[in-house]
View 1 (cartoon, helix red, strand yellow):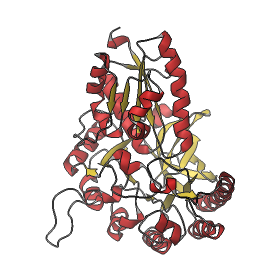
View 2 (cartoon, rainbow, N blue to C red; view 1 turned 180 degrees about the vertical axis):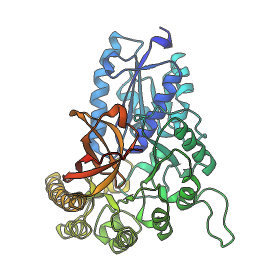
View 3 (cartoon, rainbow, N blue to C red; view 1 turned 30 degrees about the horizontal axis):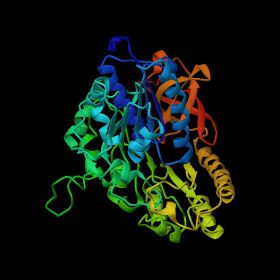
View 4 (cartoon, rainbow, N blue to C red; view 1 turned 90 degrees about the horizontal axis):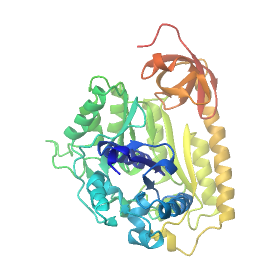
Length: 451
């Protein structure tokens, strides 16, 4: 069978880094002559890009794999690939568990997919999980959206949070050069993209590993410097960045966001717990007081900024009182959005083998209580939009109502309004907000305003 007839299907689990990696791998497969298939059962190559952060994501991968492994007995030329963090963590054990697999590859090998597949097509079973130096990426990712795109600026993570498997699966921090990042953004602008999100597992660490200091002895490559450097790319209307770490978040960065018109007033800064003892056990390197100061500073400079975060409940040893400190933090700060999770032990992480694990019942009770508070606070925060005119970047049609389009405000609120996607896609539109729900808005277009 020639490549021109072959079809691929990618299923992505987990974080935005994984989504960006999947888009890049889809780009490589399409350059190799593969066509995309929505239905995995019609594809000749199936790739699962996996995540180890939550247990259920890992279990799902195994159940999906089981189905396709059976199919491979009838269709021996089916190619099965597991990429991402489960691949990195399990390595050859995956092959032992699912011998039908052709390729197991860690996140650092994304750019090598073409070469690795050549080995597979030559008859090898391949495991690529050894650490590599990341090569500058020249492949053109296949972007899921025609309006917004991810741009990786730093790979890996040097933090050692006790619950997290990322450093061991994504390797040490490696920043791309500002020139390479700007060139990618310029290319995206030429292709008609209007918004880019700069991505890193710990984006505030950007540039620490690049050479160069200023005359005052300050490191000259920081995320703030990068924002100034890429800000004026013509055609790009909006810039976002994620994920921030409270330990490295600077006032200089807040000032840059305030000064630079294209940078959206939206910050994603995980706090994980509102209790100092738990934060210490997690090795997060800050206190809840320090976290509160950051949010207060942002709100002082940009009162309307939208703030989202991540939190974990049921970390080993967490008492009811310590959990209530997390509730208190959420109560006091009122996030626009909060991703919550019950702690789930990851193999190879320190916290996984601690004796003081919390029962599933307690974890699920705490998660429910936190989620209830999150929804209440988000609904309070969202009321400020009612009656306001917001700038919305139109991304797509509303899948539930074809007369409507949807996009996001600068504060990253999903917004729906009546409109024609053919005319509005990729446009910045002024929308008067008529309805504000906890996590989304509805409104009507203000006449004669699209640009």
